[in-house]
Length: 484
Ligand code: HEM
Image 1 (cartoon, rainbow, N blue to C red):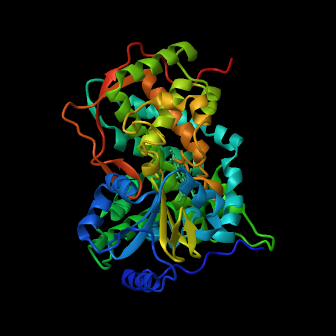
Image 2 (image 1 turned 120 degrees about the horizontal axis):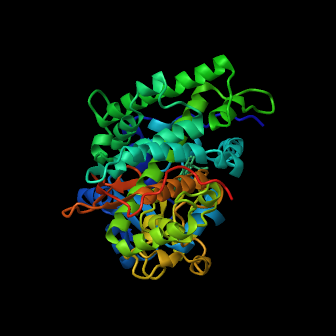
Image 3 (image 1 turned 90 degrees about the horizontal axis):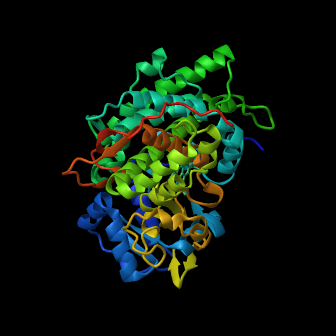
């Protein structure tokens, strides 16, 4: 069967989509779960600005499945381990991503893996999986170490850095080189500020719902499109130069250029662009947030930093990690810090879906064609699953404690057939950045810093993360240790 494209793009006129949503809501054949179903601008704004407390309060009032009217329509939330498992694994085929309330993301990513469903999703995923096999990912360690070491060379003790912006630039360079074999210092890439353009494009998703409906010049949509077109130039120029030269490497772009169906037809430039844009977005934004939240928590828990440094002193040879150590996650203290960071701050915090058929869950009916979300962020903050969830406690993730977690309790990478395809790549990158950073510097927060979190559409520290750079007590050499 052919790698045929997805169904036509949804109507990009948001007013038409809105009327369609209302019609479908009215024609629901079963009632929505209990909740707040009257229109409220205040609730809509609260959800956009600070969704976690609203979701946790609603969970306390209505239980694990409830409805909130957000902007124009009802949105169902299903929280907790059983709900996560239901949506991502046991009943995944009753949900689509493409028509979820995150469908606006199609405006940036087109029809890449994240925004497609069904057989096309399955086939596209199969075509891309070899790019994420262990050996391919292992080949990226050198790029990650080199790029991180260079980025660290630019940090100076005694100065302040926006760790979020620093990591975003670094993660994009890694994504460009390791995933697409694209030279970030080449002429085309240098003429494009990819990090700034992603920032500009993604800011659309944090603007007010009402503003997002507008089209035409000077609207958030126009700024999104402008940024996307500039990023397109970078991607299309690489596609065309690779097609022209026939040059291939170990990267995913090479894989996509050579992917073909049983009838021999290949992917179009637009299809490749959409996958590349999706991976560039998903492959750098989430890792950036995780590194930022991790160092925010470390700065507030010096005793955890001491444990990490003691682990480095014992485990690292000549103060440098080996590729095997980074790949395997055998630095146990760091691994628990990473797991706990992704519990407290899962960057891809919401799993947006639309139901296909009506269904029942925990005694409530949910209509077909309803917007339904699972939410790792809220699920990871339920006290009956994670005691005192607001506390940052890496020891929740000892091997034994992890094995004892109920199915669906911990889902920072989603689950089932849509589990994050870049999970190993992302974990490796975060380990590499964190390990190398800790071998050279200690970071602290400015005294008056207060963390607020924005979603756009992943969660990250609002306004960036200012951190003060200090030298580590003893500074080891950078780079990889030789494998013994
Ligand atoms: C800490 C790092 C990361 C986290 C926490 C994360 C989280 C997630 C989650 C939760 C999903 C599923 C969303 C859903 O169910 O709707 C997902 C999907 C995806 N992620 Fe990641 N991600 C990370 C890193 C990466 C990286 C590095 C890449 C690419 C290199 C990537 C590419 C993707 C793609 C393409 C999908 C869609 C998969 C599909 O639908 O088949 N992610 N990610």
